[in-house]
Image (cartoon, rainbow, N blue to C red):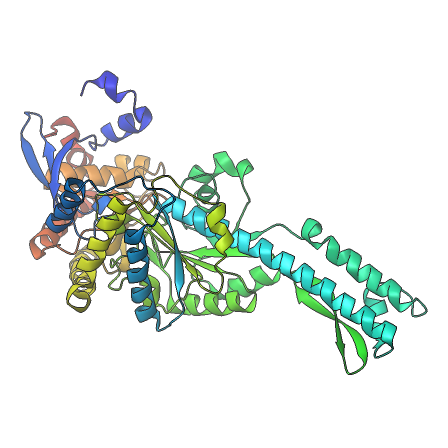
Length: 530
């Protein structure tokens, strides 16, 4: 492709990646291997540890997934059959329910809303949670109106008297008529829907939930979010893995309204919680935030606090779900039960764009189906692929999940060995299953001129990625919000040889960094093979 054509797509991005040798054309892929076009037009195999940002738990072009796609296309499977029965989507929902109920030991159903991407799944969850919140607000208002009517009847019939606390609560003197107190309470109830606080949304510092209009507001990185903050509701960002910060944050937003009760011949006053909490979003492992797993202590407190304040939990399993963690739902390993789960990426088998939001039965609002839709959502083609993916993951009692856990442990073991040798260069290795991060130490004050220049600019991880690509044919990439951390998201087909070659490449780059050898670190830029 000529340079003029490249200028029409991702112009700035293309120029940026070319400076660190990542402007490579990949021409085919299979498993954990991608073949890049070299300078002479030939093919060079590259081991891919990026894995489509978590979309390839089964690897590139898995033969059984490809065969299913061909079969669906050969049978002229309808993609556009809107407003009709969608048995394939229903089957996907049924399988996901079986998995969820098994991993969380529950029989409560979850309703499925389909979309096309992870960011859309997040938007579905938040939109539904807000509809549910508004409807709960309306239900509260109606209940208070009914309770006031019952109180009026009881006072008129003489079967109850007004407790002095009711007059005090609405700021009336003890000599005021009981009807005046009820009138004041009713006026407050009728303005509740208008005057109640707006939705309270919470998410975690370092979290990433997409880049659409709504989801970008929930993504912590200000580089992505700041240009668009005026367009949406602003969430509160809570510190990750600090359980002590959760209860005070929600308590500060708690809002109540006055209601009445009739019992034992007395009309009394009581406070009711106003449903101000829309949702709290959480990733079991923060991906773009630097591969940061939630601690069990944090997950336990989050569950308890959200239950106390009736704040729905949205568990974002877009990167961690579909088996990558060693279970289908990474949150099941923490026993973090969500009111919503979002799935995408690997659910499409690396071939189709599909996502699903699972909504807990006791919160589901059927009215949502009338106000939300998507042209390509739940089509038979993408649902057919998802069914094949689920079948492959669930085969033999979930061998894929056990494989992810074992391969991930082997990968971490190899990386920890490198870190032990170069603990001045690599500060941490962390993750869960086949979602692993390698954090490089901050050497912006002691490293070579190139390191001192690239680390503060957030480019160091890209430079290391370019080095590993050209010198060792290893494809990695830093996380979006923690550029000193390399992400690893290979498939369950990861081999010992691929792990060992990564470890060899890391040892070499660590040796170069320890020696502050800029000439060797950047030599590949002057003698590129791609």
